[in-house]
Length: 344
Image 1 (cartoon, rainbow, N blue to C red):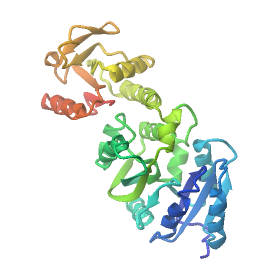
Image 2: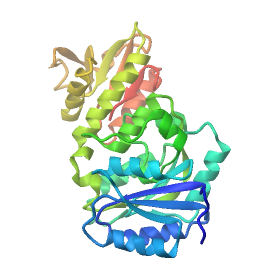
Image 3: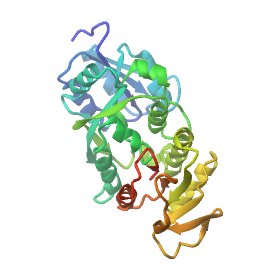
Image 4: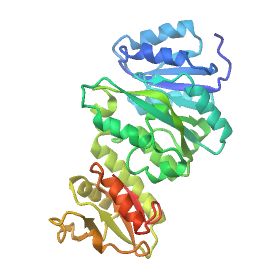
């Protein structure tokens, strides 16, 4: 197949030691119903045969390129790939995942029909190499993120967790230039970029359809690298939530927090580093009510004021708690993004 001078979409695929999964991944790309693409595979210092395998594909198909990253790490590899892209549309892909056959066609069509949208994702299907019972957490996360479709849903839930599976996104190169590239640091490079883009006004949506099969495995980067630890997520979340709150908290609203468990207290400490200190904490556990969190009193949720008097930050992330908090607050007239937000 002859590569067009300017393909409609550039697939950016960073990889390192992906020999066990790369063929299946490559075959899913070759099976795309939309043919006008280029693949830029970025070798991040592999020591196995994965680069050799991809170069074998490139000898058969001129749309495929295999390059070596000039830096170290996924953020630098991704930025290098976007820099080398010949298209104005960038599709992310990972070496252990699978594209559904119409993925590129449907996401490109979506961006064409909605010029105001900067980034479009899709629902994903979890495929697991983990022992039975070890992928429950990922399964719950996939179910949660698959229910976020509109820009409003994505924006309102951005501080709960990352609203997208990274390899499911397609975005405009102009948006990448406008809102900024991936950053390298002690944080998940994708989540940091979503939070930064949303803070700067990017519009993001998700197609209500599974277009990617997302693999969970023991060696998944998000399981083993410190940049994807709970602490790393909480830190970057605190940074961008503090910026959001400084813009949206009305002067006449008092700041409250819901939750005093271990995770909630850690998140509260991180928020304090950015000058965000709740005046009070709410609890449902009678054993905790009457105590203090850093000199702020712990009160019963029955003592909560009206939406006109306080802004509530939900810090409790235990299973099922989020839904109960939302129900309680909205039954009292609180509105997400107006006088409450969830951080867990």
